[in-house]
Length: 275
Image 1 (spheres, rainbow, N blue to C red):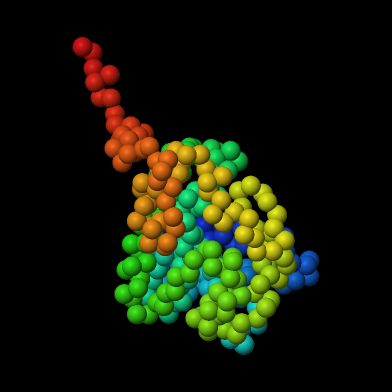
Image 2: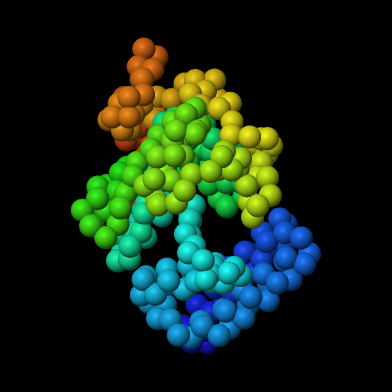
């Protein structure tokens, strides 16, 4: 099987996944039309793109996503994707990028419940989650610093807390930045025009934008987890004006290094010697 055929299969899986979302949120009649248009565009246009080129990939995905809709009127495609800034390092297209900054301790507290119902099934444990959060958060900041120097990409940073606590004002700022007219409809989270109740790892169903878990990391995390985040990401926490919980931090960077080394790098090579 050729490399192109492999990629075609991967993209076909993506289309199937999209259709599952459409099926969940659309009426039967709308879903039938969406399915027909998506598959038609995919079959007609897939071979026209160079899938070794990130700009071609992005253009293909954008046009595929818009294919079920009437595009005679101007359409703005908005993608919500984790760690998308790393793809932007290679893309040379006009893009408006919104970076959502959040307290890393709140991020970790949102991920920890997934240890029981998600991450353990893919072989990840507590330390994987800690160090993965640290690495991704740190690299994200570095990637955004590089993107800011790419004139073709416009970047705007907003705080998660502002989006939740000052929703209307923040959405008006975002609308102005991206270039579309603000509407109060934006205050109600939706998925394909239907109410969206969130996708958290605790299966909580929210009726509206919720401030329930903002700044609740002290209640949701144990002290060791708090200490880890505050040592590894101290500068990042302070630069966004979050407060440290240093009074109870009895860990040192040396302790963290030892645990990191023991889990991922240290190998007892002498145990296999016949001495």
